[in-house]
Length: 227
Ligand code: DC
Image 1 (cartoon, protein in one colour):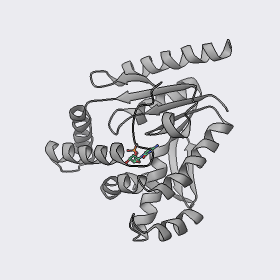
Image 2 (cartoon, protein in one colour; image 1 turned 30 degrees about the vertical axis):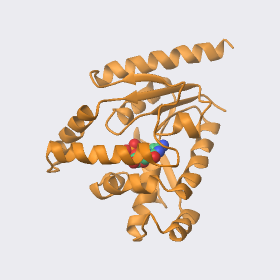
Image 3 (cartoon, rainbow, N blue to C red; image 1 turned 45 degrees about the horizontal axis):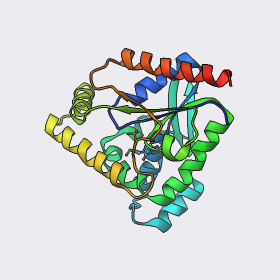
């Protein structure tokens, strides 16, 4: 196994932004595992397949090709050869992804793909089950948390910037719903790994969280090199 940093945390914890910066600074390939579940969700929505239709989902999974590429400093997501970087972030996908991410056959397909990625290169992988299921032996495990209210606040501000019209209360409710689905599902529920280092980003800036995480990774790297 190469050097693996697992970062698990809820939506809105700043995970995506921070993982990208830390990956660049520490020369680790940044892997957004949520994007993979978003691709499967998009494909199912495009083909009108429901999360309960396991046979049809299996058919889709048999032929699916998901690629995470870095081009000109940008992280791009390709689904069956098509650039879907923007399309996987639409409200429709946001509203449906937690349901599809709870389907066992989907996780059974995606998890080995993620393991393969972490075996061939040094990675910083972000998601919900990286430190618990995908890489229980990761070199570094971080659980990046944030209060529900602050996460809703961040998402609400992002929406305004994107021109999406929704009230703070609506955003808060939708984040609560997704969190419930992710933490209460039977397969790979979103929980903190016992040995993960807990970082709370509620009252910290992106720079402060980045600095903290780089410090944690650097210390572990040094320890590993001295083993
Ligand atoms: O991080 P995100 O919001 O892009 O994740 C999209 C969805 O996928 C979200 O509902 C949680 C789920 N997910 C998961 O179940 N396991 C992962 N390793 C990553 C994401």
